[in-house]
Amino acid sequence: MTANLRYTITAVLAAGVALAFMPWLLSDFLLSLALSCLMYVALASSWSMFSGATNYLSLATSAFFGIGAYVTAWGLETLPYALAVPLGGVIAGAFAALVGAAVLHLRGAYFAVLTFGLGELVRHSITYFEKTYARTVGRVLSDPPEAVTVYLTVLLITVATVATCAAVRASRFGLALAGVGADEERAQTLGVNTRRVKIAGFALSAFFAGALGAAMAVRWTYIEPMSVFNPFIGFQTVLIAMIGGAQTLLGPVVSAVVFSLFSELLRLQFPYAYLMLLGLLLIVLVLYLPGGIGSLFRGRWARA
Image 1 (cartoon, rainbow, N blue to C red):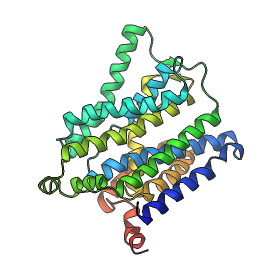
Image 2 (image 1 turned 90 degrees about the vertical axis):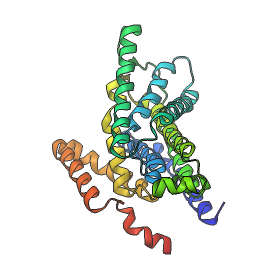
Image 3 (image 1 turned 30 degrees about the vertical axis):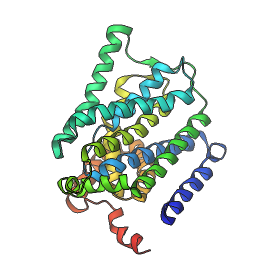
Image 4 (image 1 turned 120 degrees about the horizontal axis):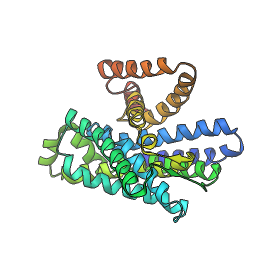
């Protein structure tokens, strides 16, 4: 472990310990806002770990999040919450590995459109299954865990996500992912098994999104496919990561916190202006700042 990686992981763990005291210091509204910030920090970081390195634009975050949420919805009556959360991540990761083995030979707009359709496919499949066999759509969570338990669980997932991202970036596996993003054919020539690397990175990213969906599912009393497979979750995750800089570690973290607080204000006060601003930000980023705001400071951070 390098000194830089050791310093980064120590800083992440220290921030996690400090944030663990928030349930006893914040009101219910502020705690809910902090939970939303943590959720998007983990989602944006896990998305950047794969898509930021490989330049494969994945829009499947909502699919993995929803799979994890439904693992909790279906299993909470028989499984403890502490087991349902990692199980949601494992199932989402296994599903991503299976899908990735079939579609990761595609790139660009083809891969983006297919991963977006993946979320819709899973949503409609679960809707059909519930209507056909359960004679209902959705699940009622009658005995969810306490709010403090949910917060600490999401915080643990977020700390694990950011620490894993830092470790991956400093590893040979992270170097292989970056090689795929820089020049996949050249990486193959140099001996990188790009197919295996892409599948593993895609599955690892999906694991954290699925675990997060399983942990956050208990916030809703009633879970139905449209709410947990909401495409807006995936779009906002991509936008947050791109604004902060998907190829940096700190960029998505800072962007998720600022964007969550800013969007909460705009969504409550100016709901239509909020959606217009999202579209405008995406256009500006693609045209003038494809590397995100974090790319402006990357050289300074490296020199420091």
